[in-house]
Image 1: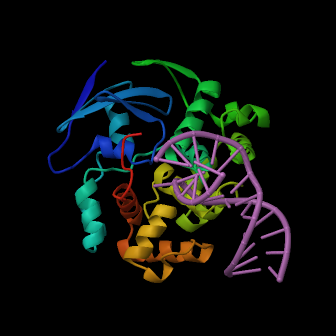
Image 2: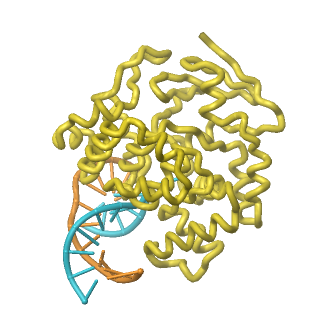
Length: 286
DNA sequence: GCCCAGGTCGCCT
DNA sequence: AGGCGACATGGG
């Protein structure tokens, strides 16, 4: 069944930017349509001007996933502090942070260390195809991202075949943890930001960057400010020039995120994503 | 072959 | 606390 949503003219939304900016790893564009799997739903969606057309999920799910009811102009004006971020906002206006399922988000960002986005997508897709539940959807058989219980029993050799490399044991340990603590996500969500961050970082393979991504994309902690090599580069060049040209040490990381939280405010995570999306090379559909 | 990528770990001072 | 190499994989 096809459903449409007509977007309000004062609430910008850009589906292409939102799904191609690298925050979520299970979407691909086929012709005019985006196809993806979210929370056990095989979804197909397209945007024509201010109209979204989709199937595979109901309106409430789509509104919630894309946070269409979040007042984006108000968020963007709150982070719009200078010409640099202003340019990123201008370039990427309509990009919204999506609400990812916490477990999938955690697993994805464990797979995302020291690698590139296409490789992360491949790993996540392989895990889904091998261990996820099949879904009959609008584009043939799709696969849900596997629950922790489905991954916990996997051997190292099993997951190695999903091209996880040295991250294999980290993912197995995280799956075991989530499987034994089914309410882990609710407990993390109920914590104050810094405590939630520490809780995630107790998992092997989850450092500051992965923890911040999971908090931002999976839990909606908008003050999270993940610092990858791109963001380090941009922030160093634009705001903290004494950090430019060297590796990001743990102390540098903390300095950057504290600066960003103070400078951009409670939606620092949106600033991060706009700066990341507007980064020089390679904003393309992948 | 090389360097880089949405980094983190373990071991060393 | 802070420095440093290792690490699997794939793209350019």
